[in-house]
Length: 361
Ligand SMILES: Nc1ncnc2c1ncn2[C@@H]1O[C@H](COP(=O)(O)OP(=O)(O)O)[C@@H](O)[C@H]1O
Ligand SMILES: [Mg+2]
Image (tube, rainbow, N blue to C red; front, top):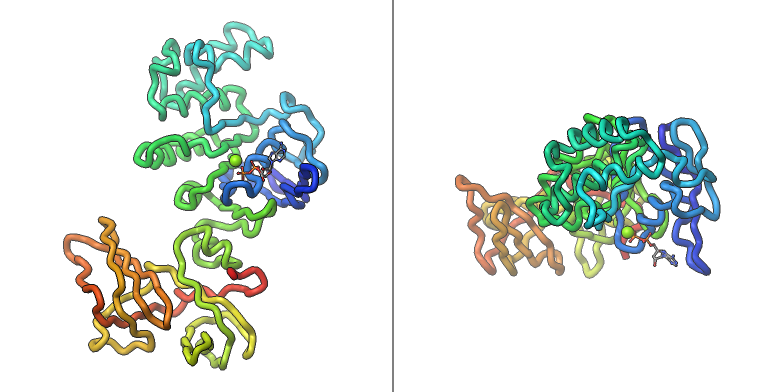
């Protein structure tokens, strides 16, 4: 049994099934991200784990003990919210001590625990400040200290970095992960930002309509998505849908309709006649001047967007628009021009063959 074991967790509001027999597990000390679009049930899932809501079905166990029906205050779970929810009129120290005072810890215990948790989040010396005197990142760390002060067995974070600007957010991602590792607490982190989920997590749980669609390592959800929804949730992709015309040992030929076809190199087994979707990440496609390259796929550059470390090209090929993202560096600037004829190529394995049952429409 995993450290956190959620089975068939269900929550219904009126007619609406918000969580639909959700299953999720985490190992001791693991950092799991719940990634999904707004409204898919992420916050509801966290609130059920924390005990702020009661489920309509299913069970939650932590460290071998079922907690489904325990009140929130007896679960020993720390939670950090997006809004931080700090008390503005209290100092940092008082904010962190508040929950301990409610539970009638002694003065000595409280002062020691507050110091320790400020230490954990690297805010020593800030105890007498008020939240308004802190930066967004520091307020976030106070909220984290307040969640960790109880030495919780589980830490839940709900979009807790979303309010920070991009640069600070990236810095806090690394810092939060470092602190979580040092403390050794198992964490469930909710986000709708796929880069955040990929960089921070041991495993990513991709969520859709109240269910977990895939739970796997960042590289597996990115490189081996189970369906089009997961592929799209983790980053940009070009989707090519068709039916399998023929196959051989190295892959198959996808019939795209309108007399178009595409040779797909893959070891994924498909049947002739089967419809499927092939997803190709923009950064996996290479461009070359059309005349110099041997490629089945040739097209024209329709737009060019310089984005600093990459350039995004939209190529009209196969009678559709294909997005191609090429890295830039001082040594290798991309030099393709508008309307230039280019050849597209990618390595075997770059074409992700997706199950059509849940593929994109
Ligand atoms: N108290 C409630 N009553 C009715 N519907 C709710 C309630 N709380 C959440 N919902 C609905 O449940 C769905 C999931 O909400 P939520 O868990 O907040 O999603 P997320 O955090 O992924 O954006 C949404 O459609 C939301 O409108
Ligand atoms: Mg939410």
